[in-house]
Length: 319
Length: 319
Image (tube, rainbow over the protein chains, first blue to last red):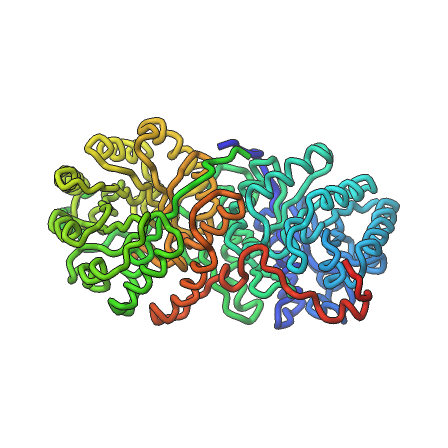
């Protein structure tokens, strides 16, 4: 098997991408405690919140308060999603280390999700990149539906490349390829990552943002890693989802990403044990039951006592 | 990304490996209907039942009746698990096309699961291989805990290779590497498959039997495919599990395996649509609720109607 980078970065997007669609409002104090706990897990980046209108996303109406009161752990990059120039100014004010801008590669998803044409979104993102450059704040651009659109089906790789190159040329600090509703598959991920890396070069980092809708999230992460990808988004406990694709599951679990790469000896900086503690506290945080296989089973080398009757049957000096 | 074989075989083990631990007894008629429905999905093999003692596994006490009354679809290989020579004679009687023998690579799991030492199991399997050779019925040998043991932790690859070579030399028609409790990870799978293929050569097919306990089943399947593996076990709906590892999930879902390989253009022979029909009927069959992401979300290119308000907002000629 051809291996990938020896060291990668894991970005935690749960506080923004997960909490934004939770049915119960998570108290500001609890959000802050969540981000602080995640800060101690070793993530490279934490997407803390979104500076959007409280009417559009009431769940994140407390963006200012959260950004103001989280504990900033040195070395962690605290990012915020910003939908427009107004949100960008609020994020500067809030002290975001990095911003995340977003548009969809497919026209219908862009219209449904952002209520703009791609042309309008493109113009807006270019204006935002210019403003952020003036302010000296790095901006990552996330391209939704990069591996397929829940309305249109297949998305042309050439269109992903066109947008990625456009924003790279306009000063984006990185590009995230988002598998918004879990339509990506491993050979597709490998091909798109390969061809984009050739177009963009090493200077502009690519991030993979995967969903586990059809069970392929870790297989896609493996394929991306083999193609040289060094940055992966994940959400603690697999929080998140997409309102436009019934049955679409949440983001890939951060803990499953961290666990798989740790098993393979790839350095992520993330410590699994405190992360699983955060996972265990999530049901109380979001006020609903959550199942978590990795939490239930433990890391791969968690062993169990042999049945009592073995000694009796085979004698003490077994195995 | 280095690709694997253009064509692979999927083996369905749900009727045996899944139903054997279901809490509710599945009626004989329903088992037969399940196997018949799976026969129409295009699997290479179906592990129909186990010829074990009714006391040990009451769920499969109707092995004779099931084998007698299933419809044999030409081209499908109907296999049975047999734990000992007595079970083997019953399986011959029942008309099994192929038999599956099993022992664990780790001593403690072998003792707990089979109530024998590995030495005893090895002797028994060699006797069974000899008897099957006389009878002209091919035998596959499944090696449990090949990627880790829930009691002992790491399992030495050299020990897997020793047993695989021993049984290959004694006439086994194939070797299955079982990740009994979901401890395998991709680079480990690739390394073990590579080194075993070198030892055993092309003549003896290797099968991967994966579990999804820690979310890595499809990533491990991808790694195995890249290493040249052409046979994969799966259980419809992810049925199955292991009584000795709390939190261990069932087998990898057959439908997720079939879907991933279909996305990648790898020929499996399995048609997803009738298979998802079988998945949808499972809760009634086993008498308990089952969640299934792929069934809920549909294949990756299942598209959804755009929101109604798009036309109003952007005009009819959108996208």
